[in-house]
Length: 422
Image (cartoon, rainbow, N blue to C red; front, side, top):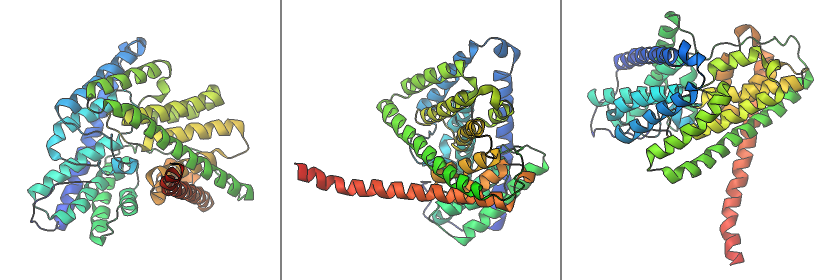
């Protein structure tokens, strides 16, 4: 996160960390409730449900509102930066854009674009934290840790894990300051406990899977294969991100045209395949219940369309996060494989692919393992299953490292080959 700070300031006190923890989770809860309320009145009212032709119209209108916020209110986007940066509040934070960020966060999530709520929430909370950093006159070197603490409070309740943000920040941040970790854990557990005490449902709500009641050597082979599949899935997602970055990059300064083109594509897909709209956390549960009715090819189509729409949405100017779309995609592929190979336990298919794909996409293996253990219900997990998840994650990270090494070697050889051919 790139931020502009005052030249002098102090170090955050514990009360300041506690304070930002309560501020962040309070804002996150209000923001989530408002978003869910708007989602209900716009997309779940009788008139829209009975008039399907309104779906593409609403997608385009709400998308154009995103474009207007970006153009005239300077609202931030996820056009640049990595997937992991979108969870840290974005690549660049400026609290002065908060009104535009707030509006575009709602319009992006309500538009039907295939994006998760964690991205907009991260940007908004980071902007709030930045404002307090300025007002409290905190020293520049502590800004990252203070903002990360605010994100921890907001994210840990949403994800349903009290240490999610601490693990994630520790993995992706080059700064290993122990004080930052303590602030993160403190603010994070505040957010988690407040969220849970209010009885709010985690967005990573547990999915019931049949329990693995025996250790089987073949399961280890399954985990290795699924780890490789998850790695290639993550690379496939990155490939589509690059494709749309190149295509939509031609409209970089033409904000409205870029959003309009994307919204038309999203609207057409949403009209015929509404299952791939939005972040996917609700649709996952619905499709799991009737996966056999959809069939293998339809489930794979859902996965492909989700990848395409997610990449298009992120590179067109919508403000969103990657976790829920990636989880949806992995689950669709796992369900398709379960229909093709019914002897393989569904819980191994789902959790191993998810852990492998997320670990490589975010370059955060421990974070991925934490996330997928929250996806499954408590009664489903045991030490053996967690071992398989870890194995799949390791395979994915190793494949990713190998591919990056090959690409790096190829890039180094290319100038020499060009010079030789010349």
